[in-house]
Image (cartoon, rainbow, N blue to C red; front, side, top):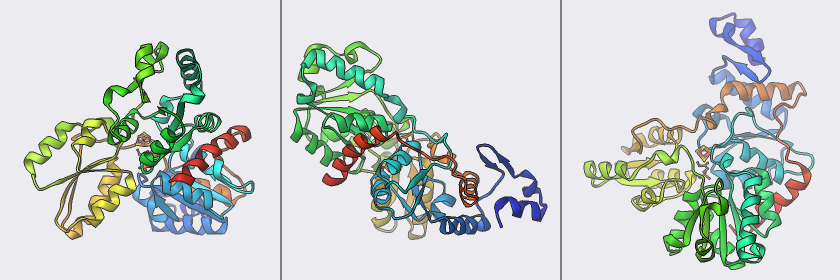
Length: 379
Ligand code: 13P
Ligand code: SF4
């Protein structure tokens, strides 16, 4: 029985609220019946459900695999199922499509699930940047390795594939930066300046050799001397969630709880990362907190939904997990994937209708795959 059949049969107040619209259902809740139906439909249609660590608890609970961007891209690349339903954001479903075999399809349950950081770089601006670098350096292809964070559109991954570049995630950024410098003397890192700066900082690159390229200004707002001296050109992009974390939050926590530990995601600003005891991907954060001694108190600088879930999971061991910012900072686009959209996607699939398929054009996918395969090979 589908969500809609069940709604009609029960005649309850909740049932009256369920509406089947062109972009999904509304009014569905992530209860046990919903979970059972999602699992039944996924199995029946041979679909695997992948969920990022920021997804809502109900979505994580029904997924076949939950993880960070690197783990999920590997799983997507190796998935035997015909359909990959990606409970994450748009660039993640694009990666699944790029790495898929011809008989496979990638689906994003809500097309509005984007990533505001990924949107801070686009191909026209990156190509303009490359042209301006050509004017200054003459042969950027011989001098600069373009590195794109996985949080970027497929055409930027294709740009990297075409120009001897590579993709990185928050987990493998240090290894990827070594690879990039082994190819050429400079790196153009986009779209997250913070991940690039933190990674370069840990390699001992002086801060004045990591300059910010502002895509809205001519020559990135830099002088010829700055461009020539730079080891890393950092694209002026950031995550709107992680930019909320401030060193002052850490100072306050340490004053209150000197024995407490601080852990942050590397999309946070350099000063936040420097003042943290641990810095790493979403998966790393979960692992470190779970493996810590009973009774440990944690201040965590990453998305609120992950922090709340983690706090619940470790509470029985007497661990206290606190969110770093005093304000609510959720990744609102990640939460677009909700029980209603997932049920709608799978029920359409069961009716033989593929909704919200993500398809990267063939030529672009082939180039993007080169950059992604380079990443998977070295990390
Ligand atoms: P992870 O690769 O650490 O899961 O991060 C993805 C992300 O978007 C964090 O904001
Ligand atoms: Fe993008 Fe930030 Fe959301 Fe991660 S938390 S998906 S970087 S907007």
